[in-house]
Structures are given as structure tokens and as C-alpha cells.
Amino acid sequence: MTTPHLYRIILPVADIEKAAQFYSAVLESDGERISPGRHYFDCGGTILACYDPQADGDPVGDGWRFHENQYLYFSVADLDAVHARIETAGGRVLSGVETMPWGERMFYAEDPFGSRISFVEEGTLFTGADVKDQ
Image 1 (cartoon, rainbow, N blue to C red):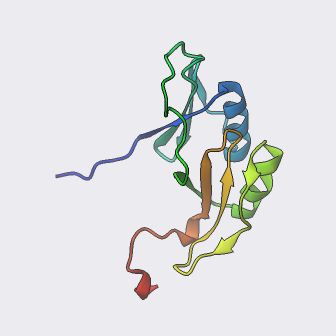
Image 2: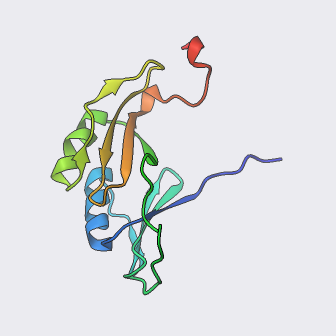
């Protein structure tokens, strides 16, 4: 049996243009407009799909937006550079760069719509080993 591969994450946004500008600046990638309300970014084989249902003419029901304490985690080569770009791009930094007890060097932020995002330095990723062994 093969291991499932996560290939796409839908991130609801209230303004597709603003989302495309923010994530293009932070991820240093133009991404690709798929439809009037969808803009995709290839994040190492997993697609971050920014989705504005109103721009696509889709109905918007209750609860379509983000949920508090739900984070998207990105692995990046230059953590300090990404940290510096967040506010310039229109987001909000929620924490300074810190090293967690399990060794990850990371920080928390919000995109312009309040969705929580986190960035972790590539060489420090924690993928589930026993924390006591770290």
C-alpha cells in the first residue's frame, strides 16, 4: 500500500486579489490564477489554493472561513527573511522567531484575512519523533 500524498489545501479568503498579492510576496512565487476566485501556489508538491467563493460566484454559507487555532505550516529556507516580509506584505506577525523545545526554529503570523500561518526553518522540521528523544 502506498502512503497517501497531501496535494492540495483550500484556504478560504475574502479577497482573491489581496490574497494573491500577500502570498506572492511572502512565498516569493507568482502562483497561478485558476479561475476568478482561485489562485494556486505550488508549495513543494502541495498546492495552496486560495479560494474566494464570491469571486467564483459560489454561495457562501456559515463557517466557510478559517477556524481559530487552525494553522498552515510552511517549511522555508530563510526564516528570518520570511519573518521580515509578513507585515510588509499586509499580514501580521504574532510571534518572534523562536526555537521550540523539540528543535524547530519558527514563528507564527496571520494573513490579511486572519488565517493563522506558521513558518519553520527547513533544517529544523519536527515530523513526529518522540519529543523526549529530542
